[in-house]
Every structure is written in C-alpha cells, then in structure tokens.
Image (cartoon, rainbow, N blue to C red; front, side, top):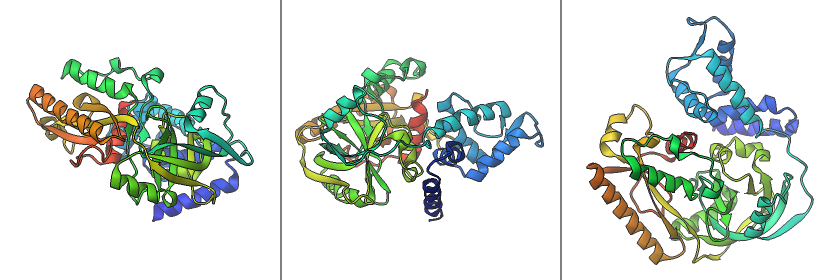
Length: 390
C-alpha cells in the first residue's frame, strides 16, 4: 500500500512538472528498475563522494543492495561483487551510465495528435514502423489483430544483437549451446501477467506469429475479460483495439514506475499500445478465437545436482541450464499436443545424456503443462535480463 501511495504521489508530481527536468526523476525510476529505495541510493552516492569510510577508495554496500545492483550493472558493462566493498570508480561509472539509461524514460514527450487514427490491421502498423513512417508523437489509434498475453523476449534472428559465442557452454557442450541459440534466435515470448492482482496485462498484437508483434499494455480494468478467457481456453484471440500508440521512452510515469516497469524497459520493440480506463474510448474487444497463431513453447531446466549445489547461495546462471523449445500453432489442439510431446521427449533425452534429473525453473506460459516452476517469475526474469547481456 505504501508503495502504491508513493507511486501515485510521484506520478502526480511528474504530471505537475510536465517532465520538465528528466535528471530530477531519473534516479527514482532507476531505483524502481533496480529494486532499491531512493534514500539507499542517495546514501551510496554520498559515500562515493566522501572519504569517511574505512577504505577511502571503496563504498561499503549491504549484501541485499549489492546483489540487486550487480544484476542491473552487468547490463551496463559494469561488474560488481555482490557483497562487501565496491570501488568508488566502478560505482561512479555505474551511476553515470545508469542515470543516462533511466533519463531516456523520463524525457519530455512530444505533443499528442488530435483525433483517432484508424490503422486497419496490425501488420500495416508494423510495416509503417519498419519503414520509419511512424513518428514519436503519441496518438490514439484503432487497430485489429491477434492478441496473445505474452511479452516478446528477443527480436527474431533478422534483428539479432546478442552474440551467443560469448557465453561459455563448456560443461555440456554443443547441445546446450544449440538449445540456447535456437531459443534466443527465433523470438520467444513469456506470459508474465495473467494474475488478477497484476496492475497491467502485458501482451502482444500480431498477424500470425509472435516475432512480428507490437507490445500491448492493458490496465486491470480492461484486462478482466481477456485474462478470464485465456485462463479458461489458452487460445489466442482476434481483437479490436482502441488505445494510445506510444514510443516506449515516452510512456506515462505510472507505467514505467509500476510493477511491470522492468519488463517494459527491456522490451524489444520501440513502440507499444496502451489501453486504460481513464480514456473512455479505449478498449480491448474480443471478437473470436484464432485457429492459427504461431510461437514458441519453451521450458528452462536445471540439473537437480546443480540446483542443490547453488541452492540458497545464488541464482542459476545461463551456463547451468537447458532451454527446450518447440514452434507450435497455439490455435490448433492437435499441433499443441504434438509439440508438447516433443518437449517431453527432449527433456528425457537430456536427462539420459547428463545422467541426472532435470528440475523446471520456468516455462513460457500456462499452455506448457501443469508442472509448477521452482523459480518465481520475478527472480527468473532478473536472471534472464542478465543473460541477455552476457
């Protein structure tokens, strides 16, 4: 409750100031991304500028804060130890890079276009974005397409940026490397926000495949029907959408400061559609189920002995896990059965090869069986976010 009150207060303050000085607000957004309090970061900044500590060249950081900083810092090219002292030089480098990163999400948004822009089908919008025909002004749009409640984690291979060769898969060799490369290359998605207590439903609007989609952010009020239908049927839906098209760096502060702020900050598409009850015209209108929408079923497994070795010490690392995946048609029951059977056979094969039982860390969505993962989504997401910057 206290956090919601703080976010509400800060949102109002930002609205009053009209985002006049992004430097003022970037630290608060940074704290939200990292998962620490504003006063904790301010104290560390003060220590980094002073010489009052026992070691004048370092900053003493509590273990819980150091762990959170280390996870975020690696994506900015800064390496921290997760306990004890952090060199002042490394900390200052981190703050400079992190503040610039966060500042981009707190800058002055361009003026809003008047009226409603009818975009037709989502494939037309995606083509216009690809051809740089969509500006950075946010606008109200009406559009149709297939909706699936998942976040696209990686762009397809045609837009790849991660170099898999940098990751050391020496323990289990070529199979493990191939499995991760395939997972990362073809643009997988992850269902993150089907629970009713989540403030936003994060989804994608596409034509026939998840890799060619645009991020959709739906408030809880407008997400109720879609959440219920998907939990019941697990099927993609053809929808009519009325919402506001944003460049993601100009999103309203109550979204970037919310529980889903980390996911949105790392989204692989520059644009997204926001649907919220404050605009009476906004809607996510279900039309019918789709019988053809393709995407990846995936599971992330870790050998049982490895999990016991690191349990309560640290989170799993990419080099220690196996990704199993199958490309499927979410709209066809027989295709799903075929691909789910394929996932099970891959798991059994890996167990025979490594001579150990596999434990499920996470999976793509509720479509992938009833087995419950041992890692919660937040912990796994932070690990995956770190993987993306290896």
